[in-house]
Image (tube, rainbow, N blue to C red; front, side, top):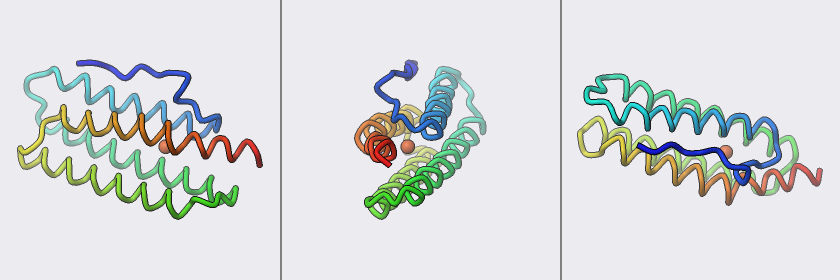
Length: 131
Ligand SMILES: [Fe+2]
């Protein structure tokens, strides 16, 4: 088990987005914690559902910030968000069908968080600051 440690470099400079990213990391870390236990029962699935719902809420917030600031890449970002949610659903389905482990889901979420946040969301921060 390893935890994602929050780093300064994750900050986008937009307070609302940063607060939600920190919460998202907490949820991924919760999955990391239960991974170490033998019988995860339905809790793992419930937690995965919580992560998915939180991600959808977070994406809606981000898109609304982009809308309000007339960000030119809102459409692209929306497409990327939809693709991530779809991919996540596929992973959780695989987990339900015993074709994936919690570890796979965590690896996907971590990649999503670090790549999407550092590459995409930071650009939102730069744009919002200019406005
Ligand atoms: Fe984000």
